Image (cartoon, rainbow, N blue to C red; front, side, top):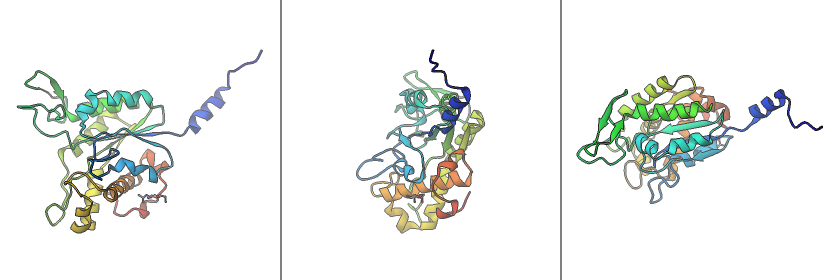
Length: 254
Ligand SMILES: *[C@@H]1O[C@H](CO)[C@@H](O)[C@H](O)[C@H]1NC(C)=O
């Protein structure tokens, strides 16, 4: 009788050799097509720096809340397998007020388990609550989660160029603490802000053809590069799949 049962050692070897996939969850600043009108999201340029495939599930106009409410994290979690990576970056659509009109995106302001109730009676959670739950869906499947602070708006809108972290950056660090060792943080906003300050106003302004949020393809290339710099500087678990050396990407580690 033939046996189709592989020895355990062969099964383990094939698992460890499987190529991981990187999934991206974010908003228009990461998404294919960016904010339209010739802009582009940085997730489109990340694959050039990695040796493993990237699935860009970022979508314009979404926040930690609406990406959750629409089942988009659940859909990614249904696909991830052990050893995959999920990069989560939100913030541009998470601010704003829940009253008088709830746009379906704004989170309840807070760093913990606070809730807010809209005029329509909808209970809204905080950014850390949404992203902690999302990240835990992924780590429960054995995936590595990278929580990334949001990209800055044009840091050179007023000169001299400057960068101040939004409250979401601190929230990202809280999410990583909540989730534990399968989660790590990249301070993407700080890396990009530093890069814009180094480039100066003329070069940075040219990255923003339509508004102060959405980048040109060249801008998105720079923003992707700074994310990769952050992976390398942090010795991220994803760094082993980066093609580039730390020194080859402009800027300093933060
Ligand atoms: C990393 O190296 C690849 C291959 O040379 C290149 O296409 C990519 O642009 C580089 N990434 C950065 C961030 O410099």
